[in-house]
Image (cartoon, rainbow, N blue to C red; front, top):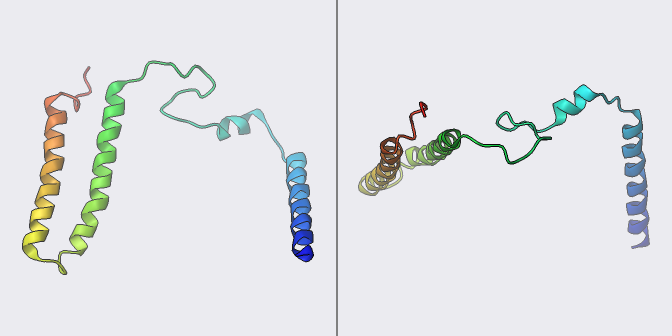
Length: 117
């Protein structure tokens, strides 16, 4: 037990020394700080967070995520086609695709797919 504690203390000291050395020896410039800052949707992370945001951009992003997840769910359906009952597989796949098409129709009906506003 004492040996384990001694090893943990030694590992902690060595890792702290290495981190301090890297902080001291690292070359930092203003450009590097700008590169390391997060970039989200063209907003400056150092400015106010209460800037008006395009609702159409948000909805198009949500639609993209929904269809991206849909593709991830359809691939396993294709691979299970051979090992499941054809009737159950068809019923499940059609239900899944119909729900997605109803959602797409709703978005189209609400004019959320038009970028003209």
